[in-house]
Image (tube, rainbow, N blue to C red; front, side, top):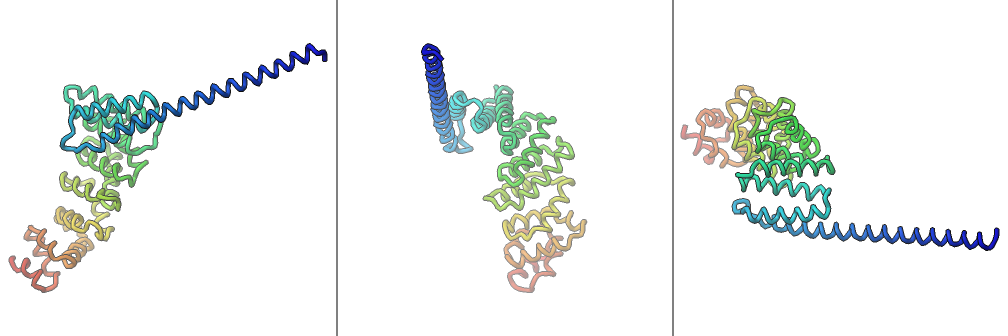
Length: 301
């Protein structure tokens, strides 16, 4: 190889090294810029979230929600496909739909679109499915997407507190509009909600049952969970639920349920005061101990 060829080869090698180094520097710079953008996005989103956490449900004002929405939108501009930002934008749009009724359709459409975009990135997130179902219910859009949203929420988050409450609420309020397979999912969700050990989830679901009429389709699910559960937690709620549907239980002949009612009265005599129906008292009193704390109530009839 001549000296000229050697110099050329060395020059090519040096050029390749410089090009490689330049590409590496460009790559590092891009990564650094992306990190900075993501950091700015996180900081901006956190600012919006902290504002949201200070809100009181009864005093939320349009200006507060609009400000949080604009801040979260700025975060999303910095990181367009972040599923959490998209989810929060969906929630804020849903709030705007309520607070700005003249633009209800506009905000409802945005809320659905943000949730869909979030699910495109994070398809197994149950709360996003549940919130999409809630928006569609508020818009009275009972279609295939609504059915899918309820069923996916329950499938991906069968014991998630927020899912248990949202799916139960939607199902009880709009039961007449849901398909049989979706109702079966809702009924199972309600049964799980009643036995949830997490926070106040069970009490919230009990409260929903007290607010709505119980359909014939839900009764077998309630019967099963009433009989199978020991009522150690939320005993008063179980007690009231059993009393509320006393006639139905009597018709079905569930002696185990009646025994539980009597056991809970013996455990706490004050529960006897929750019974205002004379027929129920006439049935229960003969099985109670003949002690003053019981007789004071039973002897009135």
